[in-house]
Length: 47
Image (cartoon, rainbow, N blue to C red; front, side, top):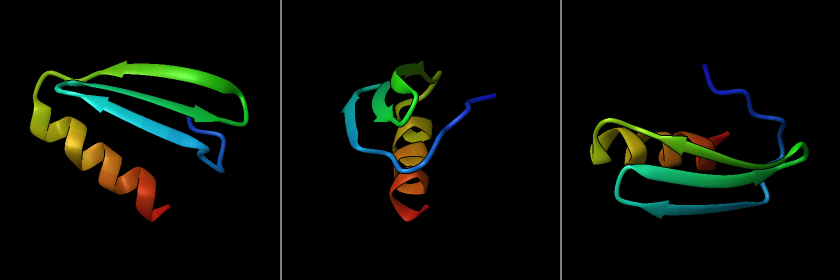
């Protein structure tokens, strides 16, 4: 489970890794597939 404290301030993507900054600080998430990482980023941007 990934916890996000909105608003998200920055997002960085490198293949399967997504690094984002929210009100709680910097978070680093690794996905098994690059497509899952891209889908997560789309979700982050939409919310």
